[in-house]
Every structure is written in C-alpha cells, then in structure tokens.
Image 1 (cartoon, rainbow, N blue to C red):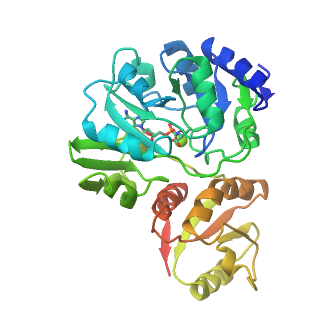
Image 2: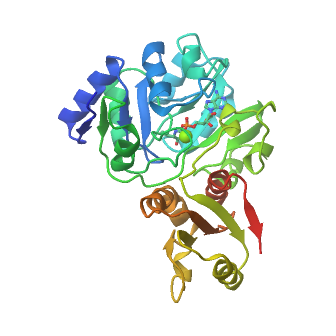
Length: 337
Ligand code: TXA
Ligand code: MG
C-alpha cells in the first residue's frame, strides 16, 4: 500500500476523515506527538494499528474525542474529579482512565475493562475527530519500541507502506506524550505515565497525587502493573543510550575515557561552548528537552551513533516525563559519576 501524504487543508482533512470512517489507519498530528489514528469503535481498524506498529495486543490504546460530552458515550461510572480535571486541562495533554462502555471493543482496550480518554488541543486533530464523527484511538505513530514521532517525516520513516495516509501538521509543540492517570478514589489521582501536565498541575485540582512506582523503576515482565505500557521496551534508538548523572566536568572526563568511533553525547545547549567531542544538544529548559528529545534520539541513528552519553535532565516540571522516557531508552542504564 502506498502511504499518501496529506496536507492540513480542509479538503485533505475531509479525505483523511473519510479514510478513518472506512476503517483505515491515518497518521495524525497532535500537540504531544503524532498518533496512528483509527476508528476506536471498529475492531478491524484497531487491529490494523497493532499490525502497523508491531505492538503487543495487550497494550491498550488511548481514545481521542473532540468534546467532553463524548466521554459519556464511551465510558461509564465516571467520577466527578474526571470532569474537574477536564475543565482545567482539556483540551490538552491529559489522558484519564475510566471504566469503558461496550462500544469500545476489547481490541482497543487491550482486553481491559477500562479506557484511557484524551481530548487533544491540536486544531488538526480536533477537526479530524469532528469530521470523522467517531472516537479515534491513537497510540504514538512510531514502530513499537522506537522513539515517538514529532514530525510527519518521522511517521513516514516508520510507517511508509504500512498505513493509508499521514496528515502533515508540522512539528509537534510539546514533544512528549500526554500524562496518563487513573483514579484510586474520588480524591486521588495516580500518575501512570508522566507527561506535559505535571504532578504540580494536577495538585491544583486533586487532593492527592501519587506517582506509580513503575514511572521511575523497571518492572519485571511477569509483574502486575497498573498500565501495560510499563512492561515494554520503549523509545530506544538503535544506538546504545546511557545516562550520565553528574556535572559537566565529570561528564567530559567520563566521555574522554570512553571516546571511540561512533560515540556521541546528548548535552544541554549551555554545554555546547568548547565541548570537545561529537554531540547533539537538546536545549536547556525542561520544555526544550521535551520538545527535542525524540527527534534528537532519531537524529543520532541517522548519524550512525553507536553509543550515546546523555546528560541527565532536571526532574522538575516536564523534566520528569523526559527522564521517564530517557531511562527506558537507556534500558535503565544510569551511570553515577
Ligand atoms: O500524547 C499521547 O498520549 C499520544 C498521542 C498520540 O495522543 N498517544 C500515546 O499513546 O502516547 P501510546 O499508546 O503510545 O501510549 C499510551 C499509554 C500506554 O503506555 C498504555 O499502556 C497506557 O497509555 N494506557 C492506555 N490505556 C490504558 C488503560 N485503559 N489502562 C492502563 N494504561 C493505559
Ligand atoms: Mg507510545
């Protein structure tokens, strides 16, 4: 199958929405990362997403809606705190897990009785959901295990020939995926995956905010997890990623001892001046790190990097999400200097 590259013109969005209505898979821009969209109520269409990504069938998909009321069509027993959080953070990078209705097939929910719901803020994503008239399930549009895509070209790289079309909406503004939460009780939010909406943000609405232990530590393949995504290899380029924890001087000293062909460093923009080895930088602030991390990991593969030493980001704000992705990209290989 040839993968069609579509623009964000209304004519092309109508075309993309027709493909979605017909059970096809379309790459779609969102404010976080690109998604692989399909009709969330159509099991056959959803199976095509898993096939294109090479994703394990027990890893559930997020369902995207364009208005809050649509949550009532796909979920039941929704607690009040869901609506309070929606009021404050939707449309945006927050995914909330609640009990699903039968209209959401088990293909979409990875066999679970729950569904993760998000209302994206990207105008193209919103328009596509509206035009298609169905909820859209969309995981990140990368091959399973590889860094998430933040441009249409990244999606084409991974999905060429595997999906019907890609809508090019330019670069994603956030760069890391949404924050995924569930509710332990009516006042307690549990973060299953940190994202653009931070624990501090959530605390302005929820009385208790808990970080699940799977966020910063490795879970065993046979361990019971709150979110299946925690079990799987994630975000890894072909290059071997290692996080170095320490200051710039100790970083330079370590790299000088281990410098050989194919070694690159992923450093902060403020480190760049006089940095003596091959490098890419991923900005200075937590927001810049988020925006650049996945595209830099992909770029390192195009440079044929073999080993990548990464400066550990600050964990404040969105930095927690960046670090959560990096520790998985590195298969939990963190070297304390
Ligand atoms: O920003 C985003 O969230 C992007 C864009 C495209 O919206 N989507 C995304 O989807 O990152 P995906 O499939 O790559 O990651 C969804 C994560 C997975 O780790 C999955 O296990 C978890 O959310 N998840 C989804 N539904 C769940 C559920 N019902 N229960 C527990 N975890 C769930
Ligand atoms: Mg993903």
